[in-house]
Length: 149
Image 1 (cartoon, rainbow, N blue to C red):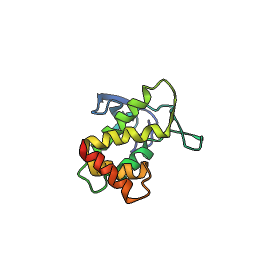
Image 2: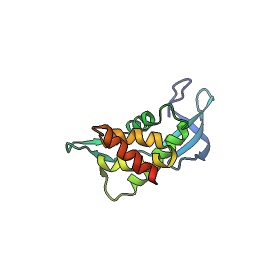
Image 3: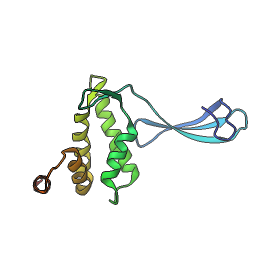
Image 4: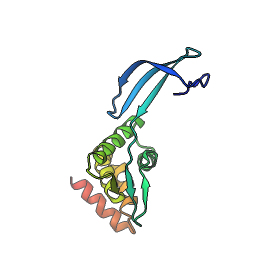
């Protein structure tokens, strides 16, 4: 781990703590050269591959999922921490599957399930893109289904 102050490549861990998100570890470090302290948040990487609609495979990208959810939650009273929790739960679900490859079509329903729990407007925004509503009737039908629950 490079020191952010002097770029020295060696540091020691002074303190380690789990965070609210199960897959992130917070470490307090001290540079062995300049002796300044800094914090890192470390996440375990996976070799998960996403199978796109056209059959192409690409590495899973957390930021891509975060961007899609964030757009749906824009101008809604949803904290960034809540979005991070949603992403972590989705990732945990994906990691428990026996395969290292996941159809992209399996991720959308997981996102919609999570958004439905916290904000109906964000859910409808995401669903309108994911389900590719072509007309107002499709949109209206989804809203009616949402309101019945």
